[in-house]
Image (cartoon, rainbow, N blue to C red; front, top):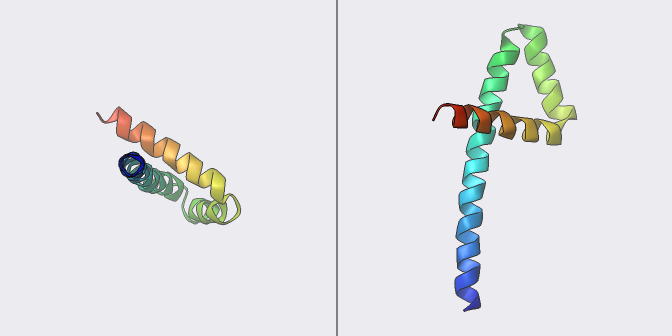
Length: 73
């Protein structure tokens, strides 16, 4: 019985991870497009934020990606 529960939890975790990865990629693309509107300075700041503020950029990209995905439905 424990095996069935572990398999179910594993499948649910994979589904959640897939959605988070999708939101992360969409959010990163949207934020990069927004930063590139400012030219080189915006793109340089974008990559600097990825280097120095890595956890915050992941959270921000997931939030932006989720909002964009949910607003398109």
